[in-house]
Image (tube, rainbow, N blue to C red; front, side, top):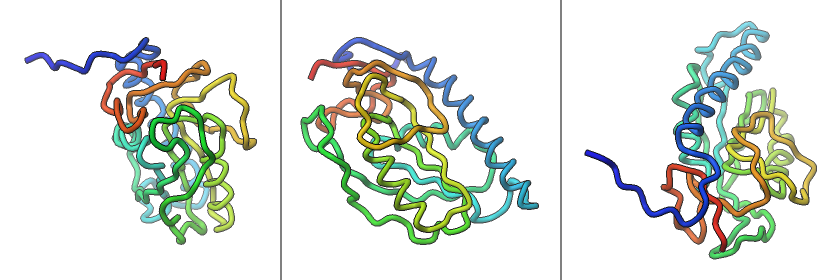
Length: 191
């Protein structure tokens, strides 16, 4: 049986096969770095409650689900919700925390996972708030790093799936007005 996907609303920038291959690479790279951190503390990959993944909902959920399958170590996940593109907007309206941030991050290795680094407001806000808790480390992983945009916050990602041009994109968790998150490719749309 062949799976029929929705008709693409625009131009495919990154095909699903490239996305799957890159996510596998990212998971292994991140796991290697976190295991090295744990080993430096005299611990192994099975150390309980030392690695915390913090996916930014809702956009990062699909990326996170694919990524963690390639990270062979004990980890926990705590979700956080940040709003910056309300409704049918294609322009960031500023980052607002919409859920509580976990308060038990002190001494832990925290990996913030987001779908896209755009203006930097969401990730900048989260990194600043997490840093106040004195974690052992903070790393940022994004599926996409949008180039050619003015960053409102001086932030870079430690792990990047793909760099993309300054276009509005959907698919792999990214949406336009709540739609297109389930597209398997990254697609640029005119909105």
